[in-house]
Length: 143
Image 1 (spheres, rainbow, N blue to C red):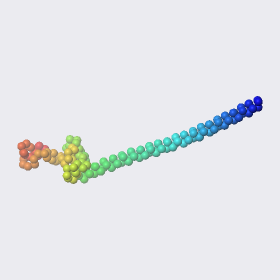
Image 2: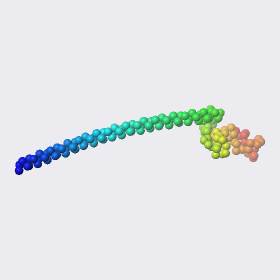
Image 3: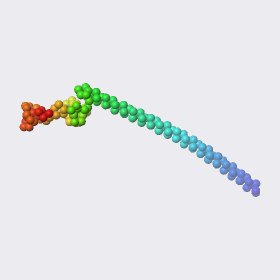
Image 4: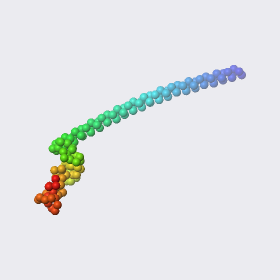
């Protein structure tokens, strides 16, 4: 009977040792898997950071090209830039499509008003005749 007890104890100890060994192997496998996933995640984050930096650089380049193009358009239109020499700081702007909405080609605008040029700031007055800009007379004297 004591032998049976000893054999049972030995079997239980062997089974326990096997269970512990399997648990340790599983723990090592899971640890390695987690480490691999962490490395993979870090690589992915680094790739996303690189792509974000490249996108930022591309946006800055596009903005610079756009600025250069606007300057070139303003130069072709006969102006040295966006700021009007006499101006109130309203500045020149190439109106994107403003002219099209008014039935004509795109026009250079001043102060955000379509088709309004600083050379004829008082174009709402009559151009006929001389006068003080009052009762039907010309308004150019006010300039």
